[in-house]
Image (tube, rainbow, N blue to C red; front, side, top):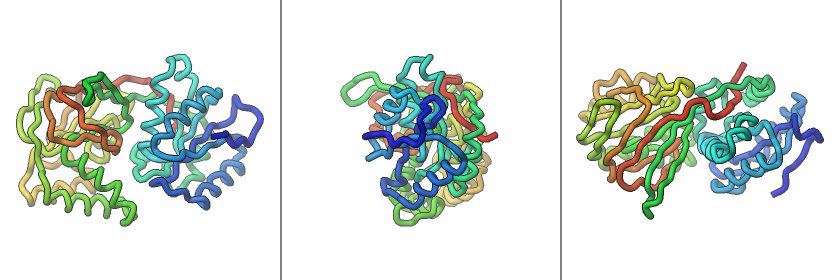
Length: 316
C-alpha cells in the first residue's frame, strides 16, 4: 500500500496509520480528522490498515521510510501491534521514534489513562502537536506455544487470565451491536455467570505462592481495564489483582465496584505490586493481552516489565 503524502519534509511530518474501528471504515470520521490535522498545520502521510494483521507490517513500513513520529488512529490492539513492532527494532532506531495515538478503537483504555478523549480528536491533535514525550514501560509475557517454541509479546495495558479474559472476548463482540462500552461489558458479564467462574491456578508473586481456584487475574502495566487502577506505566513495576471466587451476591457487588473504579475495595480482590509474576499453571483459563485473546500458553509462563523502552506522546 502506498503512503498518501501531504507534505514534502519527511523529517518533520507524521506517519499516520488509520485503523477502522471494529474493521468498519468510517469515511466521514476519518475525513474530519484529516481536516483537523490540516487546519492545525500538521504535515502528515497516512495509510489505512486493511485488517488486524496488517498493523505491524504498516508500522514497519513507516519505520523503514524514516518517520520519527508515528500516530495510530486506533485502539488498544493497534497500539499493542505498534509497540511490538517497535520492540523488534534496534534500540537506537526505537529511541529516535515517538509513538502517539488518536483514540479510535473498540477499547481505548491506554489513551484514556493519559486523558485522551475519543470524542475530542481536535484536542488530542493539539496535544500531540506539542510533542511532549515520556518514556514508558512495557509488560512482557514469555511463554511456550503449542509447538513448544519460545515466544514473547509486549503489552501496554494488561494481561488477563481467567474470567475477565473471557468477558473481554465476549465484550469485543457484543459492543458491535450494543454500542455502549458499559452495556457490552454488563451483557458479557451476565452471560459468563452461566459458565465456569473459577479456574485451578498456581501463581508465584513476590514471595507468595498461590495454589487454589481463582476467578480471574489481572497483571497491569497501566489501568488494566479498571482492575489495576493504581498501576502506572513508568515505575518499573506491575500491579496484580488476584480475585478469588466470591459468592453470587458478592459477584454483583464486585461488578458495581468495578464500574465505580473501586475494585480493590472488594473483599475477594487481593492486590500485589511486583517486578515479575510466574504462572506455573492456568491451563484451563483463557488469556488476553491488551484486550485481545491469545492462544493459551502451554505450561509455565512468566510476566515481567521492561522499564522506559518506548517514547510515547502525552498531553501537555
